[in-house]
Image (cartoon, rainbow, N blue to C red; front, side, top):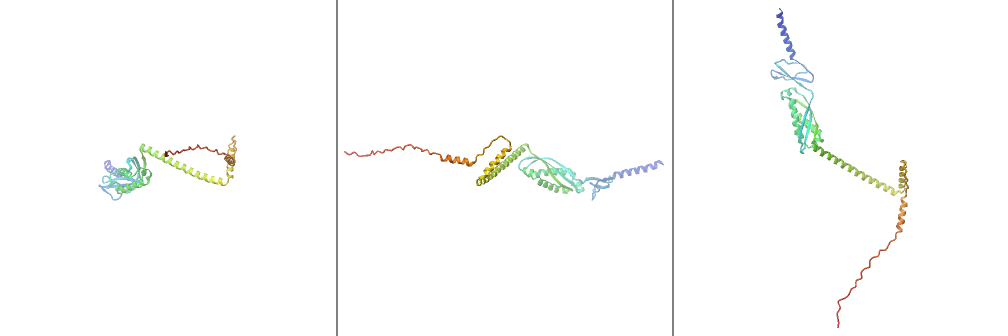
Length: 279
């Protein structure tokens, strides 16, 4: 009697375990690509409860979240023959799980290799200055190329960013010398411009003082005030310029001109040696 109930019990247990193994719970960010007898079903399954009865069905889980792909450093020779090492990061997500599974063997590896080759080909066509200064334009160009190439795999590349550009030590020293020379040039230009503006202001100040002679006396008084603030023992006697001009005029009138004796001119005596002898 006991053996009669034992066989159905094992059958039910086997069926329960089989159904339990066929049960697949997919989260919101995953989809299931189901192959039934080797043929792809027209629609991806999920999210929620999905049944895949082995060995008739085989299910492949695909994540729809954005994947961050780190592109390893690539040795690139730019158009101006400078060797640099560049690495980047690629952000992409799967839009069509069926294409990502059927049309490519490993979409992660394929996208990584495509990103490396595209990085080499695109950055090899630009110069070093453009690589350092126009990253936004290069990022957009890389994103467009990768997006077109991976569209047939059901993948959408949303962003490509160049992370770092490693330069050789010789190039770094040359760029630092160039930057230092540029800074010195700007400093000299600014200094020269300051001198030019100061000269213009001095000319205007001299013209103003020339029209109003009292202004120089006011400058004397202001200078005395500035010296007195410092509480020092310096004694200053301002001398008016008119007094000095008077002394100079007086000395100019008393100058005596000393005659300069010139050496006597030599006297030339001409003798007529051509005379006729008359007997």
